[in-house]
Length: 458
Image (tube, rainbow, N blue to C red; front, side):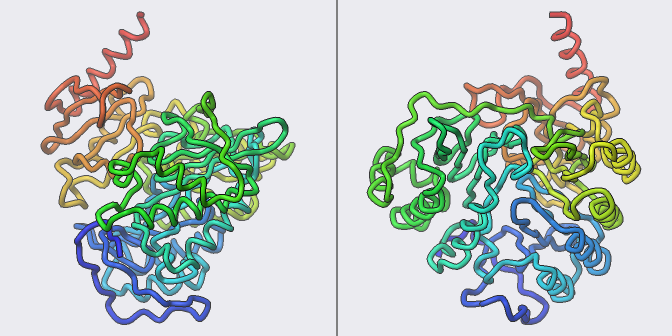
């Protein structure tokens, strides 16, 4: 069985009794990735990661998360860069925290399925005016299959799939092992797909009609497992040895329809700020409102407040996004100003001009043994030094846990309060071009302000 690392699985405090609807046929595997059934230790306590189908959580489920986070953890809840949630500071009573979450319907169909529920949708799936297809039915089929087909439990807990329905609001820069993107051809909906990349930067390798989308995903996953050696935990590892042309040839033999060639196809990349503010939905008179908790962190009271707003003004659900933010969908247009004010009263940002709404920071040295600086505190300080919003990623080490894509500006910690500054450049791997070394936060703020003035003058 493939695993993402050699770290041993921290044992639960006692054997976990799962609800009857869970068919537990495979033990939870050893890996350093947190899950709902696997609480992984950090400096600030345990981490429990709750994977949300399509990033969606009901108001009732949100209250359950808030309750157990308050009772059995530090009440710190994080929005992740895959539209999931994680509870930090989990204490020793793991069972008491996990069982209410399972009872609320937040768990996998099988114990082994917790690792493979790595399907990311656009946050506005099903409600976006520009969507080519509503991806939610196909997503349900895929999630059902990856949890019920025993062999797919061999996939790494990091092996990830993205399904994009052509929405205006879509995170297209996160690399995925398999990505799919909907488009229209001669009045018929197709899914373009690519491997070990993302729609924003990598070419599509082919397309199939949407009706064959589930078949395509299953064929890619099983072919990967057929070809990969144990050390090939991700698609990029396999394609480092197996030419992509050979993979596509073998994939085509497993499909019931021919692959459409797409030599010129490119996905339009939407504006990245559409997760902040108020935007129209497909249904007339309805809007979604995007709000950002500072640096992706909420507390239990804030999550309860979001649940209350969802019940009062929306459809009773909250959607989490890959920008570590939240959406309230199905708000009446006339209620949007009031809902925005109430979101702000909860401490969330609804204005793209707010500097802290555009900053990304990992957990940092306060809670992670690998972090070289207190990135979250440094990010808050940096926000006070910026007159204009910048998309900036502060990371405590090279692992870049808080951002799956490369931000326009990256500050890489080298010591407490000191960072190397990188600017994103397509021709450079990693974080981009190293521009300055060992900057304090004050110096980084001054450098960015000077660059902003220079760009404005130009």
